[in-house]
Length: 74
Image (cartoon, rainbow, N blue to C red):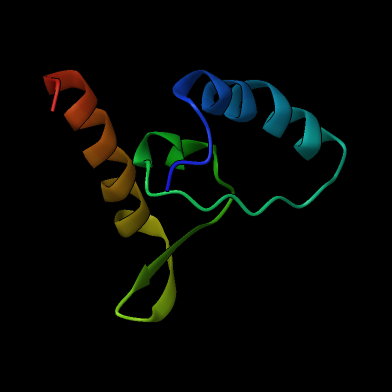
């Protein structure tokens, strides 16, 4: 379920997360909302019970898919 409103998520990702990163803190953010993937140092995907890190093209495609849907209004 969603943990916060859209406004609270924006505050978390744009204000709180950068502050925590500058303070050297580790943050695990679990979300199906791929609009925020770009903020992650590492991007992990859980599929069929298996956790894998998305790197290179896989990560780029995950982030680009989010941007594409935002641009088209989907």
